[in-house]
Length: 254
Ligand code: URA
Image 1 (tube, protein in one colour):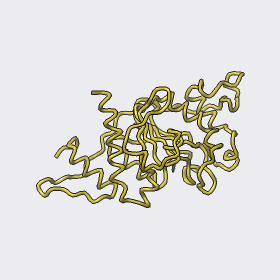
Image 2: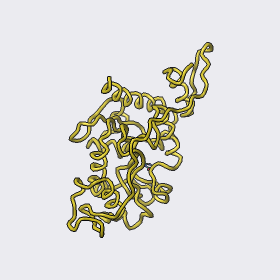
Image 3: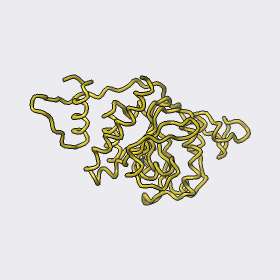
Image 4: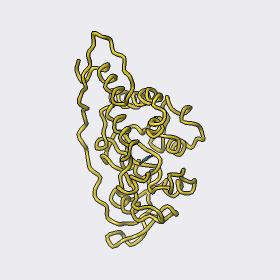
């Protein structure tokens, strides 16, 4: 059975996600290596710069609106951001990780303790599960782009406030505009509700294709991996959401 066999991929995915996969006895499926798409472009290093946020020596003399910043200046603006009180308690900002021209953009909620220390999104246990979810659709944290709605850790992992989310929104919108993903995967309630502007539970938002922003980017909602760690029985639904997101890309390329 080959790595491109849909049944083999399904079974491997379910195994990786810790779901019992039933296989007909005449079909033996071995673990398959995950195919990763080549990285298209790495986000460049940060230089402190403006946003409507702050300025530095290498930045233009006047504050540039966030929606006009290039990638490096946007990173620098986030690193220097003091728009809300989360800047007082963070260890470091968490901008995002992945390919700057990714087809898939995964958007979570906010950094947790480990992410706050390391400056990278989804590096804890939930992150390992997210990696497995992405591997199931031949993606990784270097071929996709992973970011959060909120760039600084809310103390005690509380939900971000509406004001904090509003302060961070231009940064995320600019990331999406620069990356121009072909599909967005919104993981969890905070991300889904924020991106769609709907106060509706994830269970009612998932399972269909929404659209986001001026480019009408297809957006699929699914459960947050941290929720899956508590409710592993929901993993099969996440698998269906991932397939839905992948089908959006396949439909586009024919
Ligand atoms: N949960 C999130 O939503 N984002 C992270 O970066 C880590 C955990």
